[in-house]
Image (cartoon, rainbow, N blue to C red; front, side, top):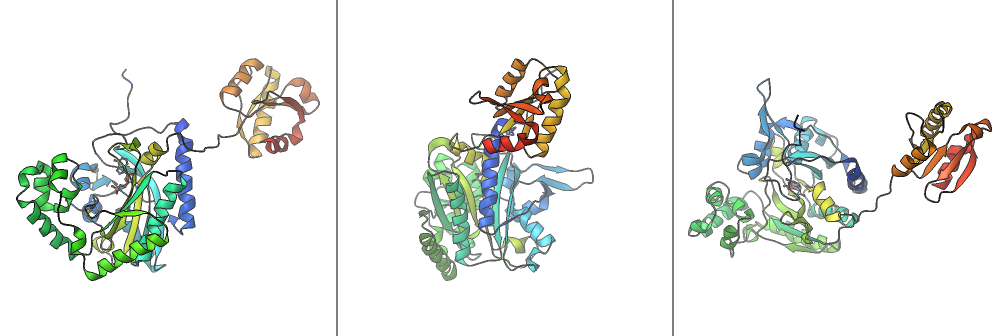
Length: 419
Ligand code: AMP
């Protein structure tokens, strides 16, 4: 029978790769705590309506990329394509704003988008992110950008650039959209067919298109920064001052719009500047979305957040990642008479907190030590008959080959002192 494979664009994460994943995830959790963020977990399946209202009906994600299905109870459900809309749904559902004026939450988990698979672009990928709900001050924008930059740098990724822009408030977008429609009106034949359609529905998306004719056509397009009101302009200026205090190098990129409709004012990206990621160079994306809480049925609550894709960070990291191997002990016996003893000793060492591998049946010592070596064990414990009569075992250092007799009672302490 034909062996089954993963669904196109989805991938297994195999045990050998797991230490790298844990390294990234644990560092993210640690730095989240340093910045005052607590973890939140939301379901992978949400009502379709959440993403239509949250992300925007004319975005690529909602238009083309969602995994949506009707369940047996006729509910229209979607696999979440991103984390922010779910976090805000949860914030409203549990009235989390009542407990504190500013809520800081972070999350980590699989997201699903039916995009064209490429290096660094998958249909199931893992995102981690943070949301700072309830603060409107530029200092909260600067803090969250610093959090994202500090995290990426702490991983050891140095080749990055930080790009920022402002999308202004609700008065900016209609004016800017009109300016774009005017600008592109006599360039329609130069735009791809998708952008011709986007120009009617969501002209900002034309600025995001990766097709070369559209990149050319938008040269000299008007800048959104010319359409900011005084408050939004002041906010953006203040943010830039604060980023300098944080010592963050950044570029203002007025054509950056990002793919989700919910953003207002600040948006930012961290790009990998090495060519490891090919065209998928954005490793972190984020911004402010002051209207999303209201859009999803709450009051107006200013919010800012970011998300990064773990796969892309791992591609950037390659093998430059300092991971401690799991320190393992292998317990071997010689004849069948040793079997019970190996189980007892393995059990004792595990209960003392050590990582242990033990055979399920006895075999030659040579074969067992070979297996110990293959498993990467630091030490082997040889629980033979002769030593056992003296309440001892042989402890073999698998790196140096040195062997010593150790009393069973002090075995766990002895191993620990040598690790
Ligand atoms: P977004 O939610 O689109 O703002 O994306 C935030 C980050 O998630 C990106 O910068 C990527 O690192 C990651 N990401 C988004 N889409 C994908 C995908 N299809 N495959 C892998 N990573 C992705």
